[in-house]
Amino acid sequence: AAALAATVGMGTAMAGTLDSTWKEATLPQVKAMLAKDTGKVSGDTVTYSGKTVHVVAAAVLPGFPFPSFEVHDKKNPTLEIPAGATVDVTFINTNKGFGHSFDITKKGPPYAVMPVIDPIIAGTGFSPVP
Image 1 (cartoon, helix red, strand yellow):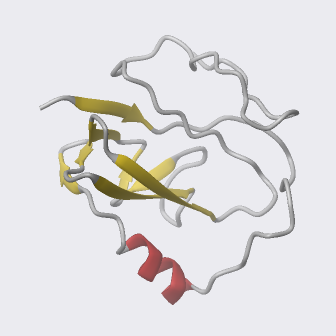
Image 2 (image 1 turned 120 degrees about the vertical axis):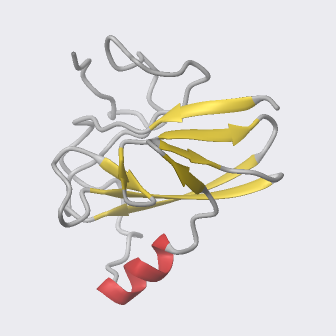
């Protein structure tokens, strides 16, 4: 089966929120959101199946190093998503006011640098990392 490999990484995109529509959540609410991720863990990979998948990516959960994203309690995992699937992503940012990049690519790791991608929102972007 064809799969889209996605690697979750962090960047220093911006130092503020883009809008005021974000909401604060309690720890029980965060745990409930994390439980909605539909992937299955194997090693450092989270594999999804079906025509619609739900990814929950949390930035810097307690106990994880900065900078990182966590999916299913894995730091910066590779995500395998079926080709053609509809992907719904929920982002949880535990450090207010600091933007993060989340990049999806067909190429699997390792990466020499962050991919150079035109930002979706003007004024955002990220720096290459070794």
